[in-house]
Amino acid sequence: MLKYKNISVPDKGEKIEVDGANLIVGDSPIIPFIEGDGIGPDIWKAAQFVLDNAVKKTYNNKRKIEWMEIYAGDKAVRVYGKNQWLPNETIDAIKNFTVAIKGPLTTPISGGIRSLNVALRQKLDLFASVRPIRYFTGVPSPVKRPQDLNVIIFRENTEDLYTGIEFKSGTKDNNKVLNFLNYEFKKNIRDGSGIGIKLISEFGSTRLVQKAIEYAIDNDKKSVTLVHKGNIMKYTEGAFRDWGYKAAKKFFGDITITEDDLRDKYKGVLPIGKILIKDRIADNMFQQLMLRPTEYEVIATPNLNGDYLSDACAAQVGGLGFAPGANLSYSIGLFEATHGTAPKYADKDKVNPGSLILSGVMMLEYLGWKEAAKEIEKAIKRTIKAKTVTYDFARQMSGSKEVKCSVFAKEIVKNMK
Ligand code: NAP
Image 1: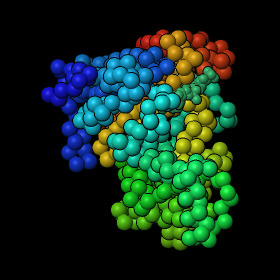
Image 2: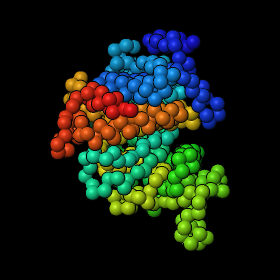
Image 3: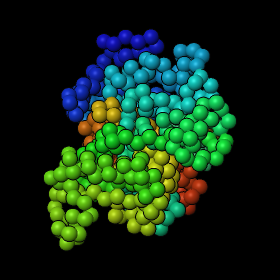
Image 4: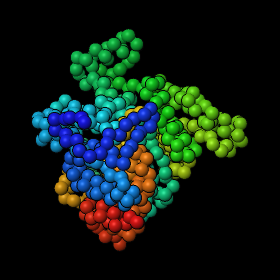
């Protein structure tokens, strides 16, 4: 077995193995978890309780997750020492054990890391951020028909304006870049402008769109929408759109059609077994998702658009407290709560653990344990229907009973069959 300095590998259980695009998952997979900072310990405890009980009940004690704690954020500093926000062991363990789950992490203000989440994504090449957005009946929502929105967003995670290539106004490097652009390329950039570089590659766009289309195929979805701002940023966002269509044609040409095909060859009716690839400009997409949400199923988009769209969609169905997420590479899956550490609620056993529990549901689906995943979803629906909810929902639901984070988890388990 693997040996680490501060990570105890469970005696029981087995490593998940990877065979090409498939995971080989035994009955007791070892799964690393990062508890997270702030509200992390509270929501992790609640999520672990729900996941363990769902697996136990669904498979009659034949399956069990062997949890293995790994460290990042404040707790990593406590265990490993000063500035050790993201120890190498943590990265190694996720690579070795393939599937992991994490709570929210504080963004360090020192130690040379811009964001632990961005660092995790880059070090593990987790190129797709996946955010399913769907409505659970009874959850307070600001829109009239939240149930009409049921989309899954595949956001490119490693490129775009997030690579951190930036030049602060007034610095020597900034002047160098600015002068180069002004003199070599005859641009007219204002003195003192801050500079950030937007990078979108064919490689990055292709693998993201491929993953989105594969998901559409596996889950019987009828369309994949490429969301971009290519009308303005032609060689980055526009290129993402073009490379997306190219990937669809090259790898899935037998089952994908475009909107032109739909109109010209199929009289507007999508043939059975085909997937429609369409594209929308990002600003239009924000209103489309409010006004005509039923027309969208799978969305593939560059990093910045995806960041905004994910939270806007989550708000439509009740907010971030209930929005799950995953970061995927070709084989590694890191599942995570999408909200932050909400430090003012730390250790108060108060907040909604829904985001982390539903990320666990995604994780179970990823393992192929779909029955346990369904069981949790059904139990959550029953719990919300009974109006037994945490403070964030309670303050917007008339007639509800406000319960603590841990009690909400217990209610979900009680509501399992
Ligand atoms: P935040 O932690 O997400 O909290 C903002 C507000 O969202 C909270 O005050 C609370 O609203 C609500 N909220 C968040 N989680 C909730 C939950 N589970 N249940 C109910 N309500 C919840 O955002 P932030 O205050 O901007 O960020 C705090 C820290 O988290 C920062 O260090 C940031 O960098 C980090 N962060 C980490 C991640 C991550 O690890 N994935 C993501 C985002 C931010 P009310 O005040 O209305 O109750």
